[in-house]
Amino acid sequence: MKFKIYNIEVTEYQSDSSDDTKVNMIQLETDRLDWSMEQYNRNRDVKSWRVISELDGRKTDDSSSI
Image 1 (tube, rainbow, N blue to C red):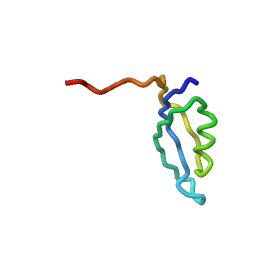
Image 2: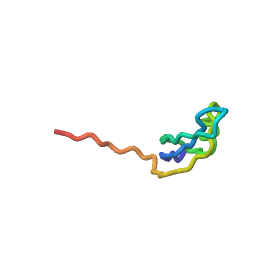
Image 3: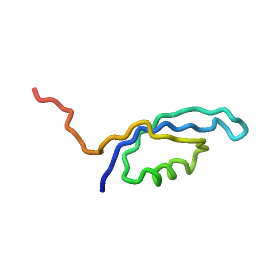
């Protein structure tokens, strides 16, 4: 499977009775972005979402040796 890391901007409604929105940034590591966002939206009142950046999911070792 080819996992990628996505930085996503999500616009959600503040409450059911208002058109006020808030914007959140989330990061997902997935091989199925549409399905993952469907799951994210299940318990939220999402107005829209968009991918800000996409990275290859390969892990790198950021530790340093002394």
